[in-house]
Image (cartoon, rainbow, N blue to C red; front, side):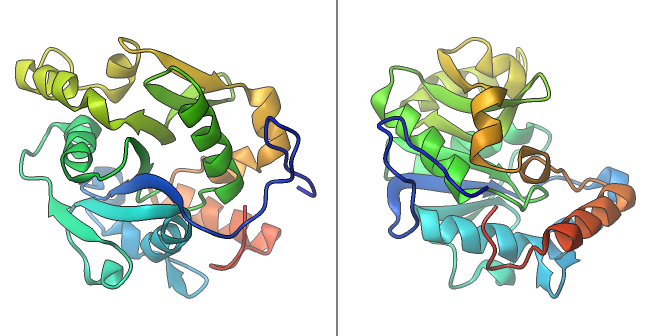
Length: 225
């Protein structure tokens, strides 16, 4: 992409953290990867967890790791917290992030989706702070994307009640009960390489595809998507 625009028409440039909290969920069991520690898989010479955390560190005022503490995040994350309630999925991870967050908005990310776009993050945050929604996310290939998405911290109590009731622990179903705003795919296409950004590394095949996609794009840990 050669040009990225905010809604007021100004150029979107790098430099300076934004006043939001970011959380990486890394507590998944990686069952489709034989239980391997996916966040330690390298792209080039850098672990995908480090790629993701380093990008978020430049964009967010604070960064948390939720799930399984790991030494790769030492010196990058502001805190690492264990997801003690196993089996409750991303909802519990998001709730933990809300408990510790200092800012009104939380950017939720997954450790197996390392190619986040700073351009996209900044656009979604702009929508969040100027809108009335509780959740701001993207649409890609006709699917709403619950990761690389913003959630209001004041959803914490209603989220806790949903987890406690165990009525449904689906992050997608929770999203459908709240006010959310969607960045349409047409605008998404002007901001970032969405196919790359929303690439999920969940098994050896998708890992090989991610490595090849990164190679084709000349991606490095310092690259901007």
